[in-house]
Image 1 (cartoon, one colour):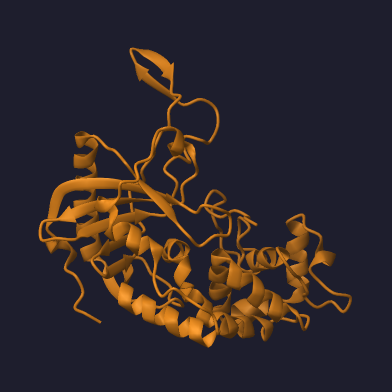
Image 2: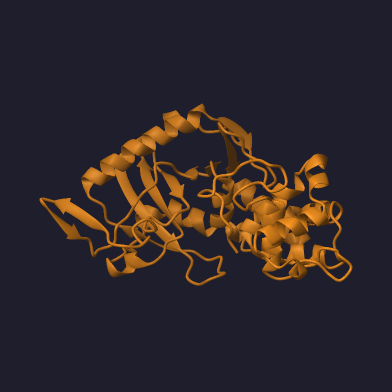
Amino acid sequence: MDEPTDWTRLDLADEVTLVLGFRPRPGSKNLTAGRVEIKKDLADALLQACRRWLLELQTKTRVPYDSDLHLDPGEYLRTTVSELTQRSTISNELADEESDQGTELYSILSTAFDSDDWYTAPELRRNFLFYAIVVRRKSGGTVAFVKQSSPQRVAKAGGWMTIFSDTLSEVDRPVFVLEPDVDIVVSGEEIAVLRPLAFERLFADLELSKELIPEHVNVITSSISCGDDLGDQLALITSRKVRARRLLRDISSFTADQWAARTNEKIREVISRRQLEPDDFFDETGRLAVEGEQVVTLLEVLASRYYTSDFDEEEMRADKVRRRL
């Protein structure tokens, strides 16, 4: 791997563009993106934020990328486009699958200033998957600051959005809320990953985390009492859903004590407490047996993602951890 970037020495120019992207249909791995025209005062504010993010990134500890790696506070994952493409090639060859050996997001970001696709106001009312602040470098190329978030989600929460200027008025145009942090920074071929789940969602065309599914599934099926088909169902669902793969990975790293707390009796108790039907999760012999979307629910139960940690008695904030099917 090439020498890592000194993020504080990147020579940012004063040219900034804002890119918004979405998936054209549910389940698609393709991305569609366009640019939004921004005024100079906003561009200046975004550029200032980008400089601050680079300074913060330089203070973090660099860790080589691994799809099975947990990030600790003060760390970021470092990789390159070439390394990711190589990993994806090996993974798809092992799985006997075809791959285009590339990533759409990288292509979108690296050619942002060449794009003539500008969003009009009506088009900005859609639910976007991500936005990226892309800045030119004086020496050539760009630096992109990516957030896997829809900038409109706060404005769409409900009620009325208003603005005050002597009198209170209703806002009937798209309102964007940009976050105070970013998930991914891309400079040339180098990628800094600050939130792995966002990275896997946005680089879904590389299917990086699929390679370890069989190993993680084996850990789970050998640690709990389950039916013969549960392993196949876990592999099937987690191969399709990024978030399910993350849950699978997290659960497979449990300690022996954590697995000892997750007896079938305790799992049944937790399922009942969460107002779910236990018989939907167990076969007639009392072993765990689920399929389809219930696989995700079971993973959430095992991972203690229901408001509090039911098995390990570790309190978790309800506004941060929700049941999502």
